[in-house]
Length: 292
Image 1: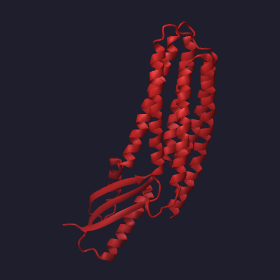
Image 2: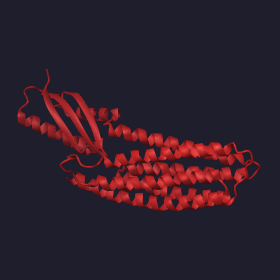
Image 3: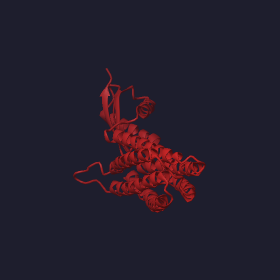
Image 4: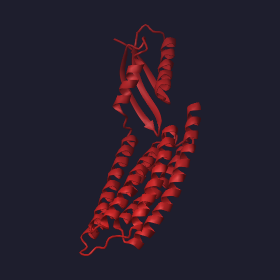
């Protein structure tokens, strides 16, 4: 129960990062879209739309974090931990839709016969947002690691990419004023491809977890750690699944057939405690069988 309470507190603190991201992204997205319309910059418009998706994504993360803190009920005996992962998947769908829209728009703009270079104010807006987003990334990344929040970690990764995108957008806008107006459209295409790549990565990670995928290397470490107990003669099988950052493990161990029931029970508790101490495993189901 202590581990559960600690996790609830971690998620509550992680919400601060989501709220900060919502406020920041909303401000930057509005700023970029207004300046993009005034300056005629396709790259800054693409970047502004990218930040709009980030605003929506941050809202999804906040909802996911709050749902994940809800206690178990009759329909959710394992709790609502996966709501955080679902929020990450929703984020990927939103990013995919906007990425495709930006890509189509940028490609069309690239083939416009006459193009004017965007106003330099668009470049300064890109530089400003790059600095702000990098500061948000550093804060949220530290908070996500400390509070063990996968959705906030995904969001912070996206914020880092956004900072680099804004910097690249600014450079492209400045360069386009040296008789290279086409560079603004090319940068918009690059931004759209980065959005699509990030969307795919977040979707892949979320789908892996929601389908009860589990890292094989982690299972090997669990197995080797269990075998350090001298009375465990063999680990016949070991499986793992996650609910948010809560890890559940099912393991079958083989022991001396002469071992008493009492000692077998004590050994299962040793295995549970060992995995909890070494890897933070929340729940371990241990089945004991006699070795042949």
